[in-house]
Image 1: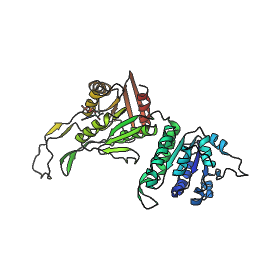
Image 2: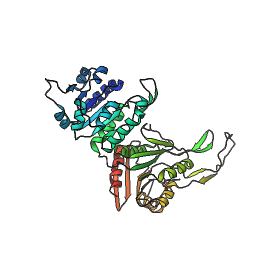
Image 3: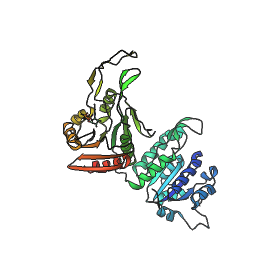
Image 4: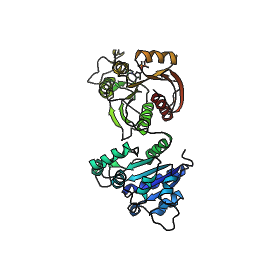
Length: 387
Ligand code: CTP
């Protein structure tokens, strides 16, 4: 997938530098050409020979290496993308201030390729308003940032500061190489997952939705620069730490959260499989069995319909329809009834776990999309952004 892509890896001086060895290895195995720049502090943590042995490409540690026939301008021009992993507060601060005093900072300054920073540091450093201000400034200037993960840090603290998983970084690299930051500055609200309607403390009514399509949309929007709010019921996927995610398990909870969040949202994707019915009464105690049991259900509120009634002219509202027959006809009915800008309809017998086929209607278009859920998510965004 990364065949012939030229990736310039910048390693700065943090304990997570050793984790970037595996990143370099994975990228190389995926076919990328990986050259590495290491700062002087990075060399204190990992030997340049390690990166050289893994990438079989030059590893440059100084601006003034007399034998090196490579210098910052040619490296900056060579790269399809720069990935700074781990990125210390120092390299972020230097870039934000326009300082170019070593090979890495000079190359960052000289490149026109996308630059992805992967910050990893002590929780207090990461939260320091100076660091946050630098990240905001650079984000506005079209530098890309991953958010660190939450966990136990090398310094002994627990918090947000851990180097993210290399698979996550690679995922960001692939998408950044492919897509532009065309959602920068937009707030995107995505709902996902299967609601659970409680019958008693042990039992609930739910459906088969995994939350994968919603998560794919949220990730696609995030990588294209959007500020994503992910409101989810039960999902069978791991939600990245860097999302602003809000759990709302029942239809009622989701109704409350979504209505609260909606006014801030520029584009809303109601991907969640919200229950249409909920028990009239949920028992506080576990219900004991009897021969037969009747469960009385009542309708839940239709969140999407309410959003359709509330939306302003500059908000875009996208609904989803899972159908087993008459796909276009049923989708069109929902599209009109709920005052949507777009509806994405899928045939439940065709949709797989990771792949999907979707018919998107709206803005005068009727387009069939298929592929992995992530690829379809990007195709949906492409269409929605044309509105
Ligand atoms: N939806 C909602 N609130 C509900 C139920 C569904 O917001 N209480 C949203 C879903 O998130 C989805 C769309 O509405 O975007 C689905 O429309 P809906 O008419 O509910 O579809 P189905 O539940 O499939 O309806 P039907 O059983 O009538 O086909």
